[in-house]
Image 1 (cartoon, rainbow, N blue to C red):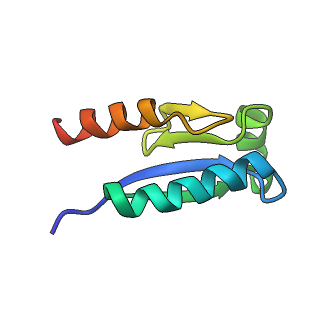
Image 2 (spheres, rainbow, N blue to C red):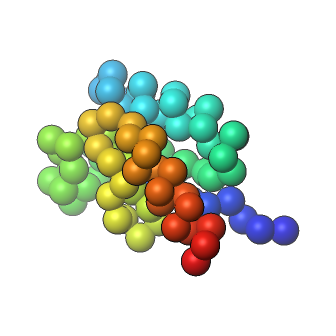
Image 3 (cartoon, rainbow, N blue to C red):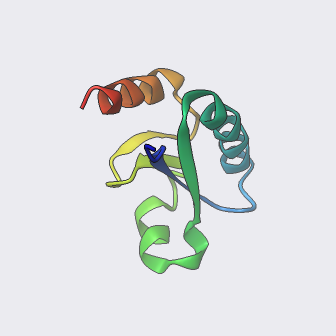
Length: 86
């Protein structure tokens, strides 16, 4: 059985953009077969410094950014297609 592709969503609990992207990704993850790990950057000084003004940031498991601020469905689909053909 294959494990679903893993993505990371960096954000903050009180950030409306972050929560909106999280909701969008919850729906899409069921449809397209990936899993999103939510990471609150306020729990980690290094992550807060790296992503502070960019959140939400959607990244792959290697921390390559897919998109930030708003969900870019085209960028996500391109990433998913690349991973399925790898």
